Image 1: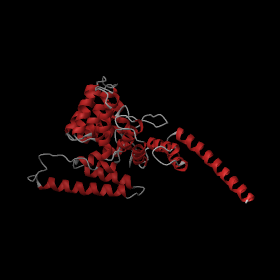
Image 2: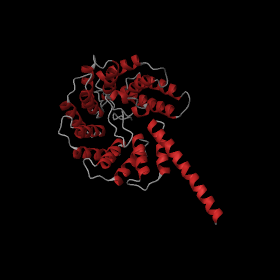
Image 3: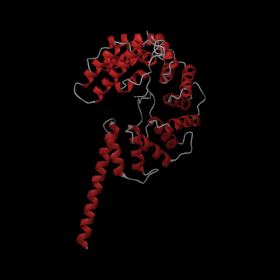
Image 4: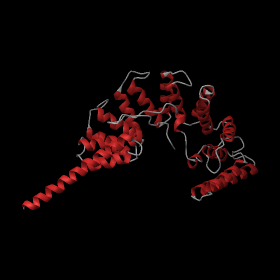
Length: 340
């Protein structure tokens, strides 16, 4: 699952990333994750439900499993077969099957993209109080008609949050933090982020840290920001690792330590986070917190170069330096042998 915490921009030397303006920019979840969506709790699905309904549900779930197997198989026609099976299961009204059909149509998996049909399916599910569908429908409305559909999108996100979709808290907070579709309101943003923290949403933890670090709606406190980012890092979040590394690098909210900065940047760099790779490369280049190692710095700049022109330029510069050093070493050895 992709998170709502996306990188927008960063300075090259020890970059500091920040969140995307709208959560819609981060959408694109894999259909294989979607099957975990919550089943309905309807009056016909309890122990006293008619046998025919129970049988239909069991058959639909068998078909869903078959659909996932087709998609996971890696076959060229696997997605198309999977979509067909999801459609079959959806005929019984199974919410997971219907939701997955919508997701595949949104992303053009197994068929050409069809946002109109996907929206119709999500609307039916949202009206039936399906939290994931409420969330996805809100994201579509914000992306397609941000200004005109903002009130309806907010209602959908609030319903999704009430139905246990924890990242909806963060989405609401981001809307009020950035403004645009709705008037900017830092107090409301903080309220939603805090609700997300209580609901154990790690992206809300990071968003609340951002508010404290920048003094948005609260007195600026790098100490509180560090505390929250450290919590996200303990939960294994890549951005949490990166942010804690930045705290240690700059000495904001915690005693400065290049050693700890390198440790946390490495955690994020190991997950291919570009700005962590750049910052760790810079530490290796300068010998701060780690033993100076230009080859290691080159490897990290090279890894980041596809996504960063600055990193590509630094990689080129280091290659020339290392090539020059190798030549000097060769001639030094050559003359030493001649004199010997």
